[in-house]
Length: 398
Picture 1 (cartoon, one colour):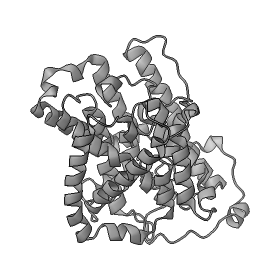
Picture 2 (cartoon, rainbow, N blue to C red):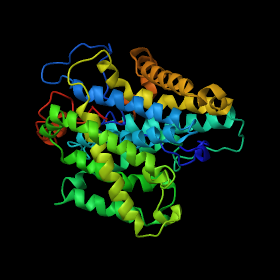
Picture 3 (cartoon, rainbow, N blue to C red):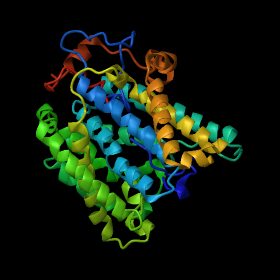
């Protein structure tokens, strides 16, 4: 989000990120008492993934705050590093927890209640917030042009629905890379449902589908953590060098090459290059995620709430002109803004907020679905692949 992109509305601004992966975006549905009480035997949540989701949603919120105060090269360098991996990490974990997704009634129901319904509710809410909060009476509600960060929910629906395809074809990752490359040279795709992002980020979702628990164990080795330090230093140097030379939209994956005034053949090159950098930095990020339970682990179950709600605070700041305050454009002001964004997002992931808004973020909606015949459910139930962890794959998202 450069200064030229400070208008959010239905603008294709970046943002990020995080169904509970089986449902929607960031987090699995937690027990009624959202605390650290362990789940029933064999269904305990994996602390590593909850920690990863919580830390990723903090980066999403901080990145959106930073996007409003990009005044110097150092600030944009940090911003570019974060934007290189925070959404790829979310998408990768989303794909990992979508491995068991099929088009059966049980999972389709969760897709509707955990992703589609929250999208409709919050797309409407953000549109009304723009109309009345920003004094824009002509601003309309449309479900085809996602507002701000809600593009991720649209993408997650499409990726989830196509999961059986990726689990059937022989070389799914190669096919997804081809589609990403084609997207980067197809400006005619347009803005509907953020299909550019759907295609260009698709390889990370498909990669997540192919991963196994041992892959995450390997990335958490001490040697990987040590290697991540020089990698981060190199990434910082590259990001610094790229600021005046590379359009930030290459990291957002919202446009084809021609829309960025670049030759068509540069699209696949830039997509493959940026995705490779994203993968490396995602591995570095995951290598530092704690494996044990931390004070914030329980908040990993509420990342969907933080993801959906933090945008209201960013937009309110824009509407009120808070980001134009001179203090926020000084180093101490940026530090304070970072801490504030992290604190607000943490509060939005907490149990009180989840209890208050579960009816719209994770509604049960039993009235909307047919009752299934138990015999039919038994016939259609296939044994789930052992994930090697005790997480509830169909419920836990990124």
